[in-house]
Length: 331
Image (cartoon, rainbow, N blue to C red; front, side):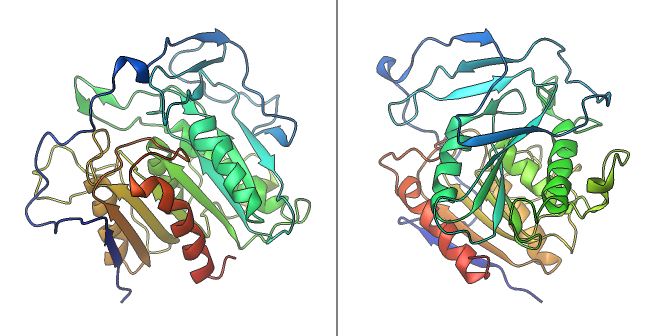
């Protein structure tokens, strides 16, 4: 049986019966916020990115719950003193391919930004992550998936019957494998990295062995399970209605013994997605024999992406990822 590898850093106290309630980040001051501005337009990458539609133009796909033109905007909270930007009301999802800078390891990673399934954090947890990956010789593929979708009803978390982002992630994985030779990537070295809601999406695509939609073309006959998965501060995994001492998964979370080896990174004081989301998921994978490595930090909060703050997790997690990719022979 595989054994979970747990690394606890930054003077983290042992987890015994639960983390003290009410643990949050220091409240942001007025200087940490800006006016939230949005406008109708379709998000487009810089010239170094090749944006491709996920689905054929003549195929009618299910639209998000709110059908209106796509918007882009900025978050009201600054991250490390800088604004971040999102896309929402996405009805025609895309993947944007960023080629490696310099050497090509032939590995590829599908990047799944967060945004609470209401928006997609395109730079904070998207293009900035691709800058890191491409400098390491990795082809980066940024997914702009369909949003919004409601995950909370009457204050209770509940998964949608049809998870549109999961369909988009599965489609992207199939397209990448189908076109692997064209993009000079190894079809057996295609993984995912997800943040927050995107972390849940990474878990979902890691365990869904069958397509959650009707097959469209040859790309959908390719396997959609990633070869490895990296999750940072994921949500929608732990059953929030269970006692704090429980590490029970939510009812909609599927666990497959064929899920890929997984790296989890989370901070104990995350005020948005409790660290138990990572802990519950990691232990569940371990129980079915999937290799897991987990790094838990005392501080760091939530949704820091690639931005460096005073918390060690923000400077250390990129190296943790690269070291792990080397250890599993991806790099």
